[in-house]
Image 1 (cartoon, rainbow, N blue to C red):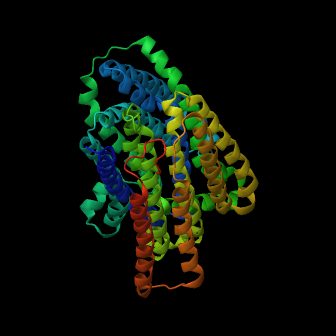
Image 2: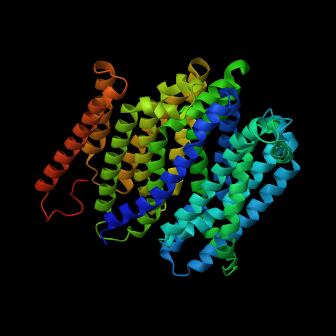
Image 3: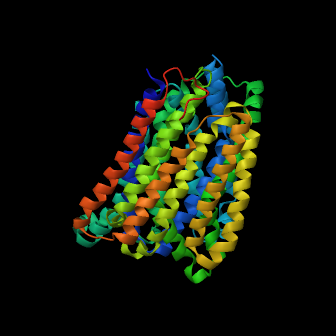
Length: 500
């Protein structure tokens, strides 16, 4: 099969599970932003920010390390067993430590009466870290259907429990019979509030762990210390880079509570967290692309035309992201309904975050140079560079501009990381990207949005024909340029001098 078609097919399957799953999760955004005020939703945003950091620590780069070693060696069972046993031991150790220090930690983050949050999240993190290797194994073995089913199962359980506790139980208390209210009182307490969001996640993670347990139990259970040391040498720079990378994404959410006055900090954090999710279509595409692309990049590395293939992947990735950017912003009057009206004030940050995530996606494509050359330490330094900038820009801009400052910090940092990674990549692993199109398509999409919002501002259903026309115009430009490019590229062109 044509490698690009294979990647597109697997991306579609991973994408289906991720898109359907994310859309199910996305349905929780209008639920949460209508059930909870921004300050309460800020608690959800904050807690999941901590989770993002800790998940990087608990997996310590072993997913990518597993791909790297399993792609080069035949004895995948030993690599799988060593990786899984390592994560089992570290995750259980983490849970026991958190269990002992739950109350002091809760007081440290200003939730002294909710130490149960800490214990719930320790369990969530431990189970998710352990299952990361079985999920990676499914991706490496090209089993996207099973991967998709398990991911959808996890999200489905999460959504159903959210709906049960946040919608059904309150409704039954108001409108149900005496017997139903008595049953509800046994399992539901309104005082738990946002805690039910965390309980739903815990049950979903536990159920997924049980679904994967038979596959984990069947492994050889042979731990190879020498292999583990080599995997750790490869993965530790990825851990550092991952922590730095998640700092770029999450630092503003972790720090906003402490940078702004207490009277507004949780409100600002709640609005920022909700509106960040309005840019979810771009995030969904990038995540699903990464699920399929990472093992794909490694397996194609030994092919003669690998560099041209990577350039082609970048090219079509940018086209897809540009279409998403244009579509979301043109139809913002529809997209905005996914958050409650109390959060509309923050929609101004959506264009900034969409483009920032496009930069992040390009950076991921560019990062292949340090992963294939075993120069993950340079990737780590690059992520550290971004983290330092993120911390600096947030401390400068968040106290003055709130979530708008945090959004611009994300934009600037991802842009600079993308640019620096490109130039480093051309030094260590040069790829002939077609920069005119990689730069031109996002700029064209942004220009069309600017022209529409500034000179053709139309609202309501009457604006739809114009918006569709703009989308068709952009698609037509892309089609004409791509057809013309194919007509001028010689079939004899080599992989080194071919355009993207």
